[in-house]
Amino acid sequence: MPGARRGAWSLIRGVVVKAAVIGVLLFGAVAYAAVGSDEESAGPAPTQSPTQSEPPHR
Figure (tube, rainbow, N blue to C red):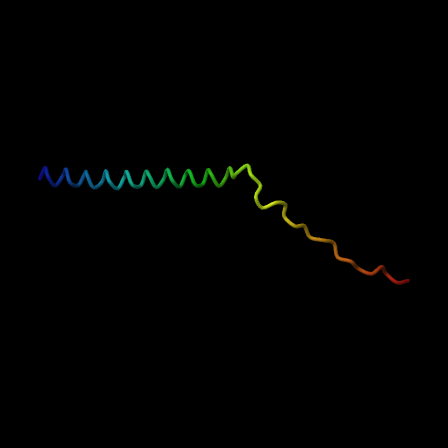
């Protein structure tokens, strides 16, 4: 029985370590996405141009 208990705790520890590593990586990815980079690689976004309409006839 002690060997099985040790094996079970070993498996639990492995799962917890993997979950912690995944959590840290996810946290880092979200923080990186939230902060963004300082470099503007895309340039300014195009703006919508006003439509040319005819003046009203009187």
